[in-house]
Image 1 (cartoon, one colour):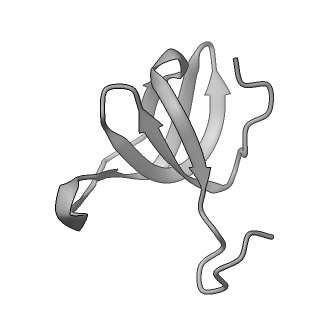
Image 2 (cartoon, one colour):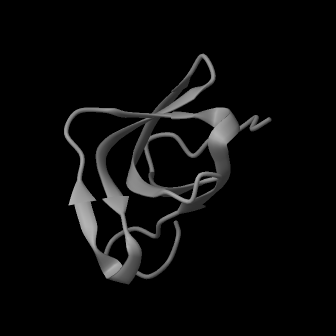
Length: 76
């Protein structure tokens, strides 16, 4: 499905089950994406920090947004 991932970049992963997670895409492993320093993004701007690593099944990924480097507003 995805050949190239923006590994070691901060991303927002939007899932087909209407969940969104922001974190560092650490790696892709056996059909899963591994996020570190992840947060669950909720409606109305609520953010819930997630402990440990978050595994997201690659088949459940709707799309991935690469977040610009902090403070610059631009993707390098």
